[in-house]
Image (tube, rainbow, N blue to C red):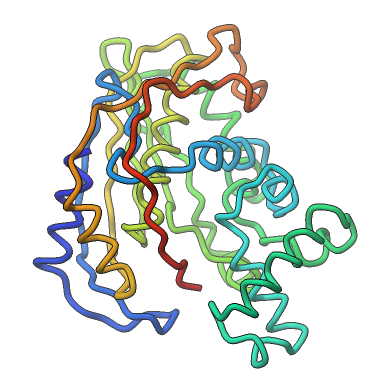
Length: 301
């Protein structure tokens, strides 16, 4: 994962300090690219522990077209909690009494997530994130992009149109009301010498918190699609628009950069699964993952 460390250093040394939507502030660069050979190991960060369970469940959530927080909450995945929770506070008039990231804000969020888990009607009203990734992958204005993609890779592997877009301009405002417009906006597959590669374009990237998840998620998606299409593994290419570090992540970034990079783990996938939509959490096993301890950092909402 030297590529990721190089990106962190590049932002710290060459980035522009900018204001942003959240009010936290960032140091940002525009335009950057990393490449990972998936035959060399699963590209999961080793200089801090990454919650692999969350990556797998979130990806399965995307693939099945789900856009409600309940499935994630019931499986202990917390990476999407902040947006619907803050929307609930705003809509119920409680935002002023619970300042962001205060202890009271955090305590109330635990109660909110617990109710999302157990109360279907509450989850239906307040757990909906809008027409985000899963909706666009499986129902982009009525078109199932993901099903089409699998068929097209098998029918026409030399195609230059093996693309899925999450950026549906007609629904961006609706996404913004309850969640966040897609950050990882478009991805394209490429078949060469019997191997499948994927390139992701990410318009906006929280490099300390989000990008390690994004790398692992799209690497895993590439592995899953390669398996169901009887292809080997090529590269995952990660291309960025606005790649930024939030100002409240600078200390954590320096701590991470001070740590030694360890060998990549291996992601084992149940070879019996031949349909992308048949995968379940138990079909994945991460082996030989030996990371440094996690580093806490707040999500900017």
